[in-house]
Amino acid sequence: MTDPAPNYLATVAAAYDSVAELYAERFAGVLDRQPLERAMLSAFADTVRDLPGPVADLGCGPGYATAYLRGLGLDIFGVDLSPEMVALARGAHPGLRFELGMMSALDLPEGSLGGAVCRYSLIHTPPADIPVVLAEVHRVLAPGGHLLLGYLAADEAATETQTYDHRVTTAYRWPPALLAAVMVEAGFVEVAQLVRAPTEDERGRQAQLLARRPPL
Image 1: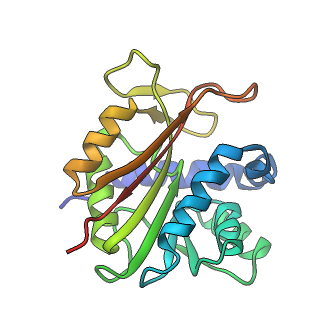
Image 2: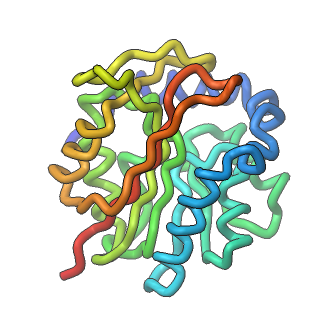
Image 3: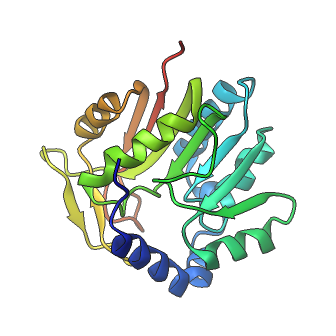
């Protein structure tokens, strides 16, 4: 299986390194303003809390969602591609573990996680490379483990992914049905999906997808 192009990964890491402090300030307390996202995170936590293995926040950024889920009782750690983001997360949340890593090649044993969270961390992955990342997440999840994705939803009439002029680096919006189909092809079972209208400070629809690796 081929990893996404190194140049793409380097571009994303460098882009987030360059805005890490500004990004952390911009999104500080963001979950306080997102009741529907909090509800999905709570449902995710309730679902995976008693499963074997810890939870990984993949693409954790400055660690605010990692800390939130730890507050809900999860054994959780964060992974991010950006060294600056990992440094900020470690400084802000010294009681939690944060590591450098790529979602396409996780340094984790097969079936070792009870759950994984990817909150808007796949939005910069070129659509052709999404199956590679999903296959790797599927590998590290235990049978019955759950994955919660946060992503940018395409326009309602769209049937294909849309390139999005993200403020940090190029991103992609997905039609919910298409992303769900790609998840199924990667071996996941869809559990629930939430799509909401944007708030005044958002530029498009926001979505959450909860899926699981089927039990044996």
